[in-house]
Image: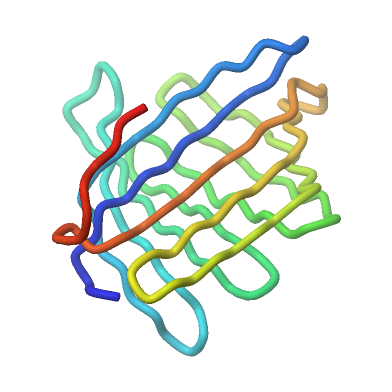
Length: 147
């Protein structure tokens, strides 16, 4: 796959049968090193001029999402495991618990797709079940389909 990619990160929270989805689609970079896939992209933070720099590292057994900037965090997802993460925002610290029930990675010639299902806790309290879908594909390939 080419270095310059279109990155889509879609997060869905499921609370009492209601689905709330947020999706970020932006230009980014992709590379592969020592059997791991890396996706890099910047994300605007609402109400601030600064950007959050994001790195997604995908290996065979785990996915790590690291954020640096106005929002700082390192979240690790491993199927069947609970991982803790500090999520630092301009408004303060949130301690996250991430219990991953499903992690699926699909790599094709021109696309990397990741789907993660997990239970989310904030400051020790269960909040919701969540799903995150990540994809990266060359910017020059295909069409952009917003749904």
